[in-house]
Image (cartoon, rainbow, N blue to C red; front, side, top):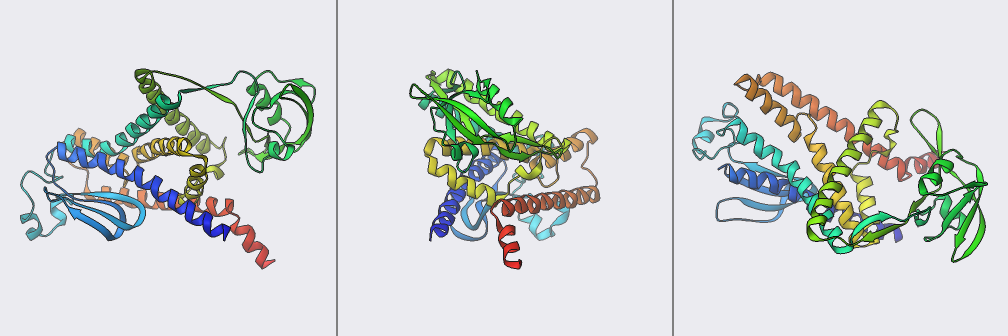
Length: 371
């Protein structure tokens, strides 16, 4: 029964989180298309058969579909003229089609989706800073929270504990704590902890985490405490934009480390992992959920800007080439690019889902059955 409740909670949170992100992304495409004089035939959240929908006064069908794994905006005349029958072209609205517009207008419409995701992240971060203040790390190695099942939880560490010494090494900051712990994977250490004015000696066996080069680092499973400083509206907006930039850079750095081999790709998550994390974050409260949505929005914006055909970034590369050449790229070249892009994304999806299933313990369970 507990697993069923977790499944429903995680699935519900995932649908809400993904629905918000997809709606904002597609709304960016929709508003940009309208601004460029294009007719939008349909705006769908989800794929497949329609659950419900309505047609607005300008002829756009707004609908929610059964498969909640994305969405789309159907632009009028989005197909290339040579790919449709003459009777279909005859029904197109003159001057309102996607391919009837300049390459610059088409690029604006495509770029507007990722831009909308970055704006959403900035708005959410700014709202959090206005509501609760700007987070500032607490001075000194004070525990903010302890991860479930971690070495810190097993040792009995609590939020508010100040870790002053590890195996005789003084700890003056949380960076000191990370540095000392990372060099002791699998070892049992003595922690000198100040709790409520009393100093306690607590033994802890450090968790071991594998890294890409085959080595291991120690992990205690605790995070530093955070204080919140009040900020005004303008400063909150500036800090929100800065936070969006910081998350973007950190994400790209993480991907770069994975490509270079200095960071394991086991951290990649697919829909299952995101659904599980959505449920866990939702349990922590609305503030954590808003922050989670903002971070995912940045990731969605970045992913869509990758220069891979079938993604927004791939289309932008194609339009840039068209602008430089003065004519579209050869159709055969575009088709090969789309096939390669689809194959790459399908491979990444399978790999990320494999990681999700591994973390969920499916393969250990199957091995146990076979054994």
